[in-house]
Length: 255
Image 1 (cartoon, rainbow, N blue to C red):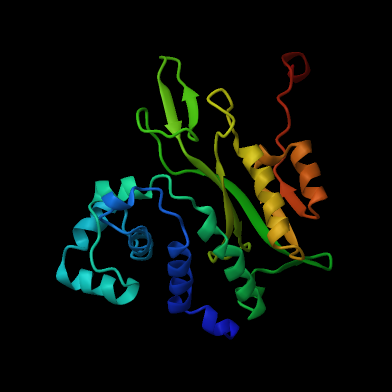
Image 2 (image 1 turned 135 degrees about the vertical axis):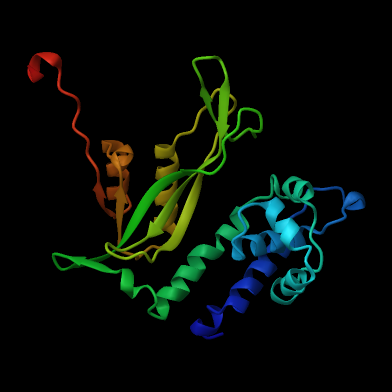
């Protein structure tokens, strides 16, 4: 298939739909009402149609015109309720369809769609790649083992899942290309707390492994301005522009 043909909406949808069928469903087959691939396609439709929540998406899809649009575009005839969809999606691995992202970027690069992001400084061309953490949920009750935990002064524990996103961008432009994302997750037991910086190290290693020859300049705030992380970037053959916040002056010096 030619590169431009693989970058149509229909081709991208079909690649994801095929990937969804390859994901193992851990549920008891005798108790399955909603097939996992159909639920995943429905979740993709929710993102595509820009609905702010699963519940709002479910309500709007009840209208006949919207439902027929869902069938035509995403081949989904019926969708589960808000609660059912959440329960089914919880725990579904993200790695299978995450791997579609570097493939898509490479296809875009081959046809020249990413050249608008290339920046040249002192004769060197690179893709500015911004790292930034994003907290997409916060609760004092709902959580999973990988959620980050923050103990408050009043004894309450706040839980939040966080990701570090790598986004190709260009100064002066609102256009971006999401390149990859890494979950900030606790995997070493209840006493082990992951952090954004550690997740960023995992992310840049994977970026280099999946984009071996791509010239990247990592851009980040002062959270990433630490020597071990900069050493990791150098080891991965990445340039970088990181904010460096000077340490506070002692009272004796400031006076």
